[in-house]
Amino acid sequence: MTELAHADRLAKIEKIREAGIDPYPARGVEHEPIADLIAAAGTPEAPGARIGETVTVAGRLLSLRDFGKLIFAPVIDRTGRIQVGMQKGRLEEWWPQRKWLDGGDLIAFTGELGFTKKGEPTIWGSEVQLLSKAVAPPPEKFHGLADKEIRYRRRYADLWTTEGVADVFMKRSLVLSRIRRFLEDQGYLEVETPILHPICGGATATPFTTKYKALGMDFYLRIAPELYLKRLIVGGFERVFEIARNFRNEGFSQRHNPEFTMLELYESQADFTRMMEICEQMMEELALAVNGSTEVEFRGNKYDMKAPFKRESYIELFKQHAGCEFDDEPAVRAKAKELGLKDIGDYWKLMNDVFEETVEEHLHGPVFVYDYPVQISPLAKRKPGDPRIAERFEVFVASMELGNAFTELNDPAEQYERFEAQVASKDPETPGEVDVDYVQALEYGMPPTGGLGIGIDRLVMVLTNQDSIRDVLLFPAMKPQASGGPEDESSNEEVPEGAAQ
Image 1: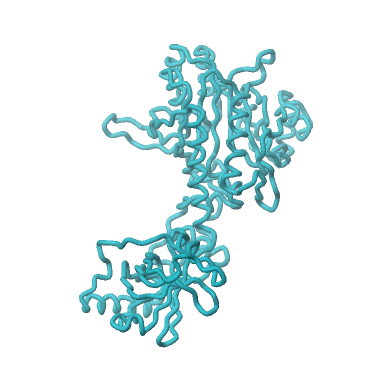
Image 2: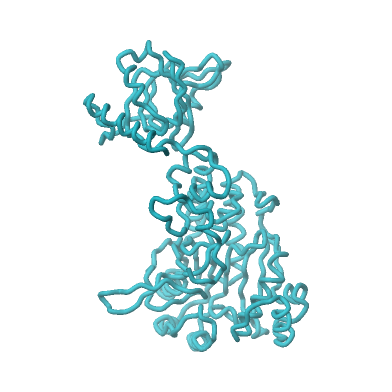
């Protein structure tokens, strides 16, 4: 916005105040959703019953087309958009105030519901009330990378100036609502667990650290709610879930943001096969709720979310695409070297890096990849008859992992050993100490349990056909913008996954 335009709007605010009008009144008005009025208008050929009625809307002026004694302006609210018509003959007393209005202003508009000669639904005004004077004008139509960065920074403007953006976030809200309904219908209880953890656990990631002054010790923003939710299974809450905000101090990319939303659920007397059923049934219902069909389009391809999903073995996929057995260490290390993968000395981490590099691009899905090596599944039970394998799966769509599930390990002695192995590993993202309290909880007895975690942000990406995770986050993580400086196109380049920010 130019200094001249800014000064012009500030001058208008002074004139409004001089006229005894508050440009920022404390009270709103009773009004109707625009979408309801559009539906009630019908068409010129078949006008609705409310044509000719006096109605009131409250929303934002997008622009003004002044024809002298007639002004047309589109007004939007969260439900839709409608044209308002301001005629001098209908607004004689108010007419001089028209010069105080600008695009971006919030107004209440009362008038008669009707049509223009061209058949466009229009409210012909009899009263105009300023609800909030905008000092900044509506942004111009966005285009290009630099402007997309501005959109993320100024989401408050992006929501009403860029077509389709608000719809994505309304669909995201619908996804969360339907998840809750789906799980509650199956007897699950929604719970809340701590965000600040004394020990970082439940996943493999670098945490954000904070100081708990009252206790004089470091705490961590949670990387996963898993260990607290399973404590509730021990406590007798047989089916629990949490839609949790998690935090991982790592790089951001098209599918990673340091702060993200995860659904985690746990069910006693269940195993990972039951979690497959829950996962595919829920995703099918969500696709239907969001798109009206189980078929979704994402990144130029179509995927059918109808249950049941395909099932494939991690071991067989590894052999097929990496060209060796997952536990053939010399061959795997040679493959990793060929791929240029970094080796920190932890074989099992390296082995899984090879899987990600060679296999995941082939996982178009939706597909369950099951039977993961137990060494990379420290919270999952071993598969009966094959102690090398954990009862675990991950669900993939478009080569992107959407969820992870186990038959939960409930043997306290084995869990303690697995925690110790994690602490002793060379992976800097593993916990630095054993969570003794969690092991103690298992000593009281945890029933056979299945657990499932689903990344909400990635799932919404797929369901709404958004290429980047930033497009489904209202306020994605971004580097600070220099005060008063221009937008920097390179200020938010992707940080390599796993790199500290």
